[in-house]
Amino acid sequence: HISRTFNISAEQYKKIFDLQNGVCALCQKNKYRNNLSVDHDHLTGRIRGLLCVRCNAGIAALFDGVSVTRIVAYIESNLDWRNA
Image (cartoon, rainbow, N blue to C red):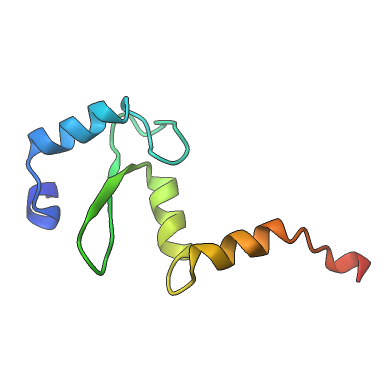
């Protein structure tokens, strides 16, 4: 599946996996028994790394048309509407 979808071999996947010490590139955990998803840029096809299912789904949900800068600014704003 990986080779057909992302055009990488099992050896290339294993190399990335080893470079990441067998953990998700974001949360640094591997709760899914070495089953990390190939994270890639949907526009360019460039492979960024391997992510756990949870981080991969989170990125897909968050970054669908929203810039990283905007998300970070929102989180860092510490806005609490209860005190507005």
